[in-house]
Image 1 (tube, rainbow, N blue to C red):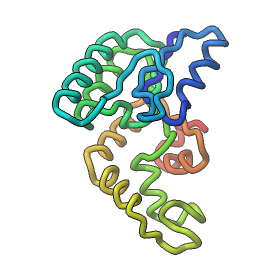
Image 2 (cartoon, one colour):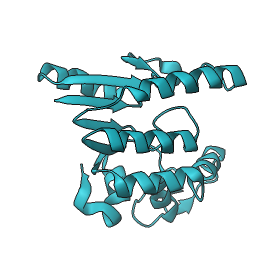
Image 3 (tube, helix red, strand yellow):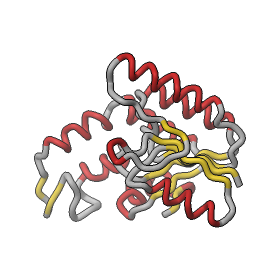
Length: 189
């Protein structure tokens, strides 16, 4: 089976690739190496800085790489922000992946709008980054997450991918619970 894993969090995709390869699958990992962690990958999608020049170089390289991402049996995205490009670019790239490959799966492996809304609700989990013992936390990091993921283009893309992907794969109980009420039929843990 030909498998493409796009994006990286804490070496999850590289470790999965190694396991799948020992089982005889042809696996390609395309990522930015999870930023400063610089994990191994087959195709580099990193962006050196947010300067106009580095952004252009990264965008050109990413679009060129994605032009070759065709004919895979399975594509798995680390989350809706699967490249360091902006939300419009990731939406465009997702559409290409969905059109040119057999099946595309969304990974629920970290911060995303479904998880964040569940944490902000404070009812399902006894603790989260947003509530400890029923008391809301007031952390600046949480505020940045809300700005990034809630009522934003990224939240819209998250919904689009969750609805149109072939399945959603969660690696932790909390991520599973975040998607369970809306996507139980296509969700696995």
